[in-house]
Image (cartoon, rainbow, N blue to C red; front, side, top):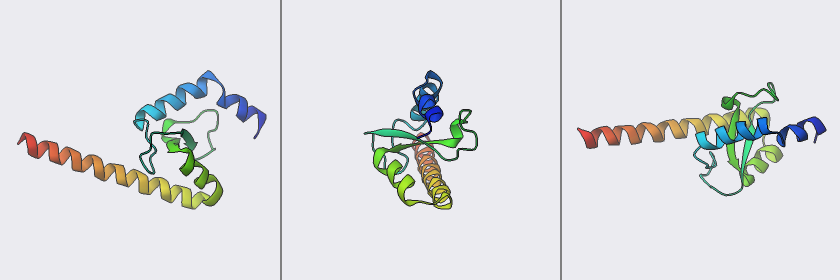
Length: 103
């Protein structure tokens, strides 16, 4: 691992960004929902050291390792899109159910 990147991952700046992403994702892996051994994954390294939380994703250690070991960049993007669509459908379903309950 690049020493500059390694130092960055130990910095208060990274820890704050990591916490924002974990909180946004409700401390759950976006692939499986696990709450154990969570990592924050970079979807791109284009803005490394100046990431936007939209470029980061909470994954359990297992899924984080799978992405780095098995998936190409294209497959990583497809996985991110699939996870995002899943959560959008889930949230829409919950909102509709709440609205029906209120109505």
